[in-house]
Image (cartoon, rainbow, N blue to C red; front, side, top):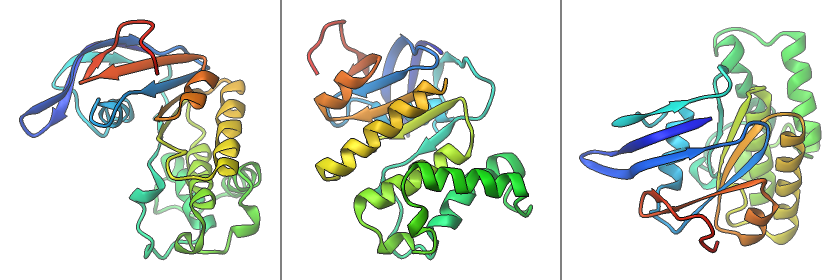
Length: 211
């Protein structure tokens, strides 16, 4: 994926200012930087939810990307079970109005299993721990079978064990040829990545800037 001279933001303010970068296909890219550096905005542009003001983004895959938001962005009161949450990932293929096919249900089952939340399928999201909820949201992203998986700080607020499981999942997905971009504040996650993109005040930091 190629990003060229990208400007984007909200209202009348540019958050990203002339971002130019390449994101390697089929690898893990860690997007790092301080709060307000533009990480979430860049993920939004890549996901198609934040329109660029100028510049270009050329994707390597024509399929719609899967965007996994932070678990804190999902209200506790939302009356959704884990299975229903993951099944929503199939809407990218079928739309919300069509019933799931046998294949869709098999994909949902597989994603529940690989993220370790199959035994929680009938629980509501608001009843889960932070780590369980984050894995359910990642399962929803995987169910989209996208070529690009975007994760906004997937380990934020998790305990060490849950963080480790999320890191394992990210590595597994990339090993299957999916391009993964995840925002993180954790140095160990950045070190695990194949590629690191550091943002400072909406611009790409010089190569070699410490994480």
